[in-house]
Image 1 (cartoon, helix red, strand yellow):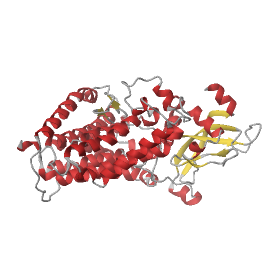
Image 2: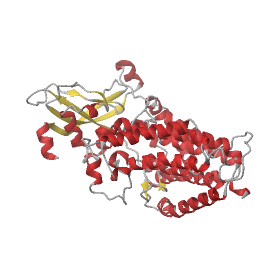
Image 3: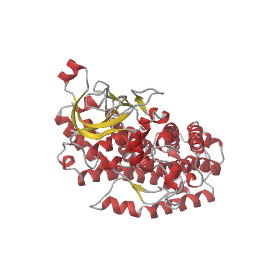
Image 4: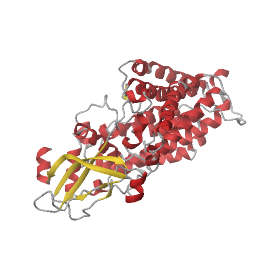
Length: 473
């Protein structure tokens, strides 16, 4: 079928696949380095406890069949190895059918992680990586030109990511309609980056322009993805520029990067395409069957997207094949942070020697300038932002976190930037307090050297010792 492939997208496919493999590598590396404290046998939300109550049909995963920390580590590092091989182009050295199977390996391994990841993996970019990774498996290798229907479905994902995010903003917080959300967002976002302080202090009229441009990019430009070239490429390029702006302004894991990767697949890069034989019949049948399945599964995401009760980041099937997306339907006006402290004193008092735990990414020390971590994802730091919004967001894991700090658990301490209680001496008591944080002004920064100013709000968790935590759990 002459219409089945688009030879002039061969370079776009190559760049897309290598970039996606790099994001898979980051995802598996994040899992390998953090899982023991978060999900391991002695983690805050142990996988064995989860799979004991959730059936395989609701959460398909290799770890439903067997779990041990060693097995999880093996799967995560295997995912790193396969992703690195794909990044190096191993799929191009294999027959077409074998290349498809190789791409399905990281998808299946990462699906196994996400489906048992519980609160730690309840983010839209997890489903987005899975949906994109599954479709990428059928994009082919050097033996065939890229199938048109797969390229179209990649644009369909990109459309839902951007258009869904635009709709949730317009239907959600009034500040998006008033063009004022960026007066607060850079200061109150989950994990600011090294330039967020400067973005926050941009003139307010420029913030209005940014919000208006965001609405155009998310509500108008996505429609142009389905127009003829070069308009579709121009639309994709504009999305890439917008996402790079967001990369500079904060740490959003790989959400911005995978959106950029999806946009790369829509670019038609002028170059001479290599000569390849026509696609085999079995490949055409397979691709069309997969496309039909994904179109069928798009029903619920589309209904959600056009609904007045639109929800963000929802998966409608346990394989995460077609999902709904969105981000920042509401924007916080005030930033709160949970500050965790410990003491060695036998009797905890307000004037005890309370020492603060420092996290890698979330604000703590007012003089510690935010760092760039994305696309690497600091899962505990992100959840601490939610914990500050409401204790209900942390009900299932904050108690176990405190317990492990009281034990000086090695794997948990590795998630932190600094522990004030180096092993082997753990604190006798741990407490948590809620503070209001705000970016300092230019004058305050010059005078104090601090990028944050914080004000005590209230007690979040009273002084707690190990026996008390054990009784609660």
